[in-house]
Length: 301
Ligand SMILES: [Zn+2]
Ligand SMILES: [Zn+2]
Image (cartoon, rainbow, N blue to C red; front, side):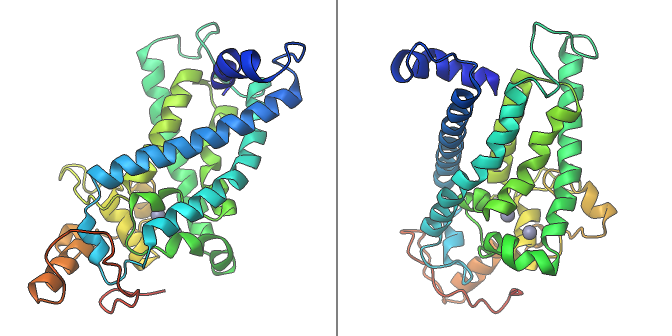
C-alpha cells in the first residue's frame, strides 16, 4: 500500500491538497490518505470490473429466473456501496501497520527469501492462493453457523441468482472477515509489494467472476476450480461449496457438491425450461423481468 500512497501523495495530495509543511510520513496524514485511497480504489474496482462483467459476461436471461429479485442489481450496488466505507476502517488499520513497516512485504531494494526472480513470484502466488483459500473456507463456514449467520452473512444470501454486483455485497463484518486472509498474509509471509497489489486486484476479479453467472469451467479443471457454477449452488443450497478458488477444502470438509449448472439443472436451464413451456417471454430485452422471489423448484432458506 505504500506504493499506492506514495503515488497519490506525489501526484495529488502534496501538490494540490496538503500544505507543504505537512510531512508525507506523518501518521495522521497517512491514515487520511489511506482512507481516501482505499475507499476510492475499492469503489472503482467494484463498479468498473462489475460493470464490465455485467455487460459482457453475465447472461441477462438469468434475470428472468423466478428467484431473481425485483430491482436486484440496484439493491446489490446500493448494499455494497453502503458497506465498503465501513469495511475500509479496519482495513486501513492493517494497511497503516503495513505502511509503517510491520509487514513482511519487500520491494526490489531488499532481499527476497528465495532470491529474486520468477520462481520466487510464482511460489508466493501459489502460497497466497492456497493460504487465503483455506482461511476463507473456514471463515465462510463459521459465518454459516446459526448464531452468526442471520446477523452477518444472510445479507449476502439474499441474492439466490447473483449478478457480478453481488460479489462485494456483504455486511461490513462479513466483508471484512472474508477479506482478512488477504491482509494477514503479508504479515506472516514474505511477499513482493507489486505482486501483492496484483494479487489484490486478482482476488477482486475472482470474487466478481464467481458471481457472474458464466458457469463454464474447462472440463479438466471442473473438479478442482471453484467457479461460478459452484458458487451459484452455494447461494442456492447454502451448505455446499464454501470455497473461493479451489474445491480442495470443500472436499476435505465434506461440503463439496458437483454444480447443478454442470448437470443441466442450473438456473439458466430452469429459465430455458420456463421459456419452452411458454411461461416466460423469449427475448432478453430489458432488465425488468424480476418477478417474485418465490421460486418453487429450488430450495429456499
Ligand atoms: Zn455463504
Ligand atoms: Zn457469493
